[in-house]
Image 1 (cartoon, one colour):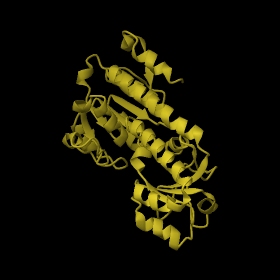
Image 2: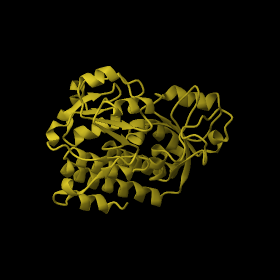
Image 3: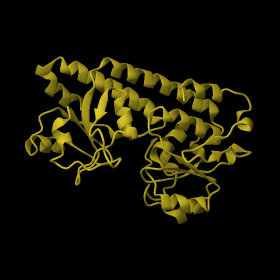
Image 4: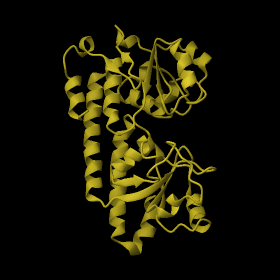
Length: 303
């Protein structure tokens, strides 16, 4: 789908009467006769933040403990467990009309259970930054937020253009993006994270993997062959001590730095800031590569 298509859709008159919108499983969704009556349970941190950004925060009646943005508004929304361990009984007590889930973040068994008891289950699964356009469109249609969806779509298109322009001007660089320790784990190239990094010319290793989130033990060739190692702030909270470990105990010599995991892995409205963050980070690293004498010191200051 082209970037322009959602823009046309969103400004068409009487769109709710004419159009059906599908979620990630192909399920069609319609707005309620009175969209203001929608009671939304969001079991996805990125989606919770996006709903508030679209002006729908007052209709969010449940969230997970990992739904921590936006502060402080989200504090007023009751928690119903985590993304993987939803307290279904507590969720049902809040009487949602809609629950929003994600294929990667929520357990299928939980979603199947909720589908039997809640009228509308919306399944999301962005895999590339452009998928956020479809996400905005879906949420705008389901909850009568077309105008807000249009605004976010335009901002995303601008951020995508910026990130891709930086990537086009840069020499591609291979990176190992670590998300977990004990065991060490990374992302495959078919994940949302890898595709976000690719917009600015960072190509994740390994090139091929059987799992979407493969383990990378110390003897994996990806560690030594990558041109840069990025240690994410989530889901594992990497710190400077892990950089030192990879230097002293593993003998890695390429640049190793911490990176904001929310900016790279959160989709929805966060993707807009995330793409701009990656564009600026990549631009700075390109500048540093031309100043080898001060590169190490400046990387530490900007991490």
